Length: 114
Image (cartoon, rainbow, N blue to C red; front, side):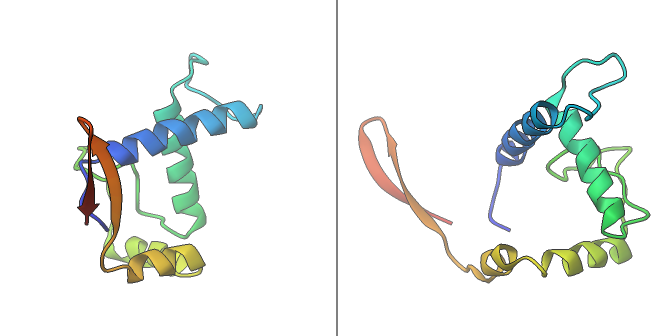
């Protein structure tokens, strides 16, 4: 909803995948039992999509950029939005018209506005 280089989605997926793998002893990693936090996160994305009623969607990355095996449709996306609108924080975020924060770079502090 704000401009992104998709690096944030990848970083969150990596963190989220590590949380899944470390806090759920029954949670499966890949078929060779290797840890891959981003793949773990994507598996959870697909599981949650089915739980939300998204029967025709398959996610292959955490950020939504085109992927040859990813798919979705308008009906599934409407189901997702319907579920998301039940979350107060989501409703607050989508009402946000502007966001800013202060960052420090090369010794200078400046405000970044999205």
